[in-house]
Length: 214
Image (cartoon, rainbow, N blue to C red):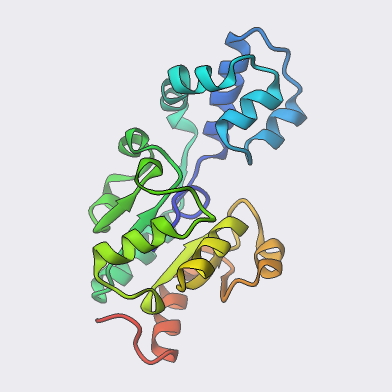
C-alpha cells in the first residue's frame, strides 16, 4: 500500500504554485518563506495562513483548477514506479491511500501507476490519516489482512495511521517529513531512497516468512 504525495509523486512545487496563484488572485501580499512553509499544511489551512479570506470557499471553488494548471511542476519518482512494477510482477497486490480528492487523480497519478494498482482510496472515501480507515478499506478491497500488509508513507500521520490499522509501516525518507521524524514516530522499516522500494519490500516479505502471495 502506498501514499501518493511525497512517495510516488512530488507535488510540493505544484501545490506551492497553486497556493501562490490563489493568494495573488485574492490580492494577498505573499511572503515566500511563509508560502514555502504552507506546502506542508492542508490547502484550506495554507490559504488561511497566507491571509486569504473565506479560505474554505476559495478552496472548494478554485483549488482544483489552480492545481491542475500547475501540473507541470509535479515530479514523478520513476524509481518508485519501477519498484511498484517489480512488486506487481511478484504477485503482490498494490493500492494507494491518499488525502487527494478523487477528481485530481486523473492528473496526479501517472497512467502507468494506475495500471499497477487494484484500489485507490481517495479523500472522499475515508476519514483522513492518522485515522486508519483508508488503509483498512484498501486491505478489505485487496482481501489481505492488515498484518500481511505494508503501508509506505512519508509523513508521521502515515505512520500513525498504519500503526492504528495494524499494518507494517514503511517510511519514505525522500518525502516531506524526512527520516528523523519518521524514526521518532516509530516507523517499522525505513527506506533511504526511491530505488530501494522494490528490493527492501521484497526482502522484508522474505524475512517475515512471506507476507503476501507471490
